[in-house]
Image 1 (cartoon, rainbow, N blue to C red):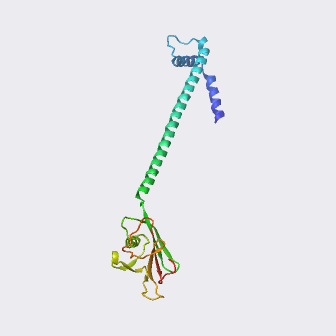
Image 2: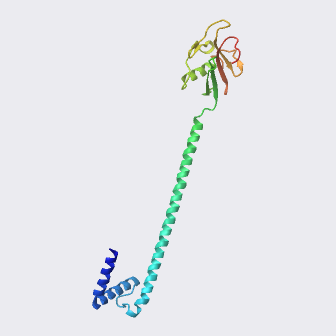
Length: 219
């Protein structure tokens, strides 16, 4: 197909008459005058046609170079805008994460107390993040553990100074006797001497309830 097109072009050139060649040259000269800013009155003479052809080529090359420079400037501006957007996005993410961390810290309790339930058979249940409040008692601690996710269930009689624990989960006090097991508690490392409903707690206190005989071996 390419060879055929070239053959047709050569044939067309051979068929061009001298008048058509002169007309083509006139159109080309007018076009060059328009590009170079020369008026029709000062039409380019034939002898200057070659010289002005060189000038035209240089002008076109300069325009092409200026176009490239303009494209480079636009590309540079685009790169700067893109980098600025990246910085703003990263800063927004940083602020969002910082606010989330601050919010989490604000929601976290200032003080906590701990509860350990020892079932006396090698199984224990721990609550290590129960919020402490002023005036909180051992009875309050059990109630909070009861309302916690995966909490405990318990039964008791009385409240406050008369609070008496009878059952935690499925283990019920067995009553009196050296071989009978009942629920007993320790405050930190000390065996309790005050009822749980009257025992006030301090931040970071550890309350341990154990199902064991009396006197117990260890907590």
